Image (cartoon, rainbow, N blue to C red; front, side, top):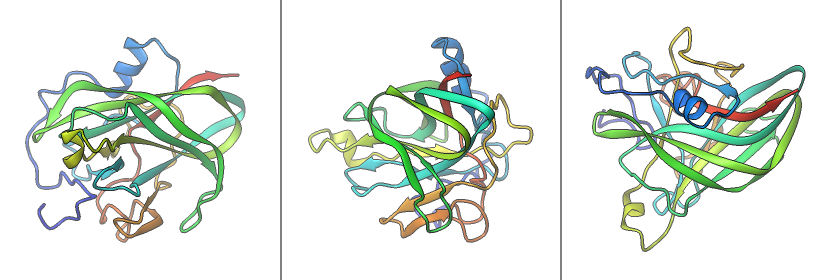
Length: 238
């Protein structure tokens, strides 16, 4: 694992079982907060041989950002009103500082093509441990409130939600790193809605990627996983 780039956190050589995992990201968001989950990519499963996670952050060490853009589909004939976005990450860092996340929803994205920004902003965010831990890292849900809500008609979009730790006087930020979990199981555990497979892109000047596929042998995840990601959308559908 030491030969892998810093932005990739691979589980290929790790055989520890996940008996300490308590609740999934979906269960915590849907049950504890009593919200309507429109999209959830599914639970991360480190026992899957393709399991991986990809650095997704804006921190003092990655000042220009490392961003995973995850595709999703609003079904035909439906209109979504989005009030929250969330993502499930692994990290050694137990804070975000400031307590906000950068988010964007885009359309028309392709390899090397940014597409069109539908809506974006910096939103108040919570950073909550799920109770699951693995290989010294803990699992956290970053959940951002989108106000005013974003209204989307049917079609394909991409979302990103990026935790921040860029307070120069917060010592935790000096070593902060957040790895967005992938989803490789078939069927996907607790998945909601449609997140297309092999449709995510990665953008990070620090790591040398410009809207590059996350999947495949030449992808940002070095050929291991990153086919879908553990992200979600909360809101209403009409």
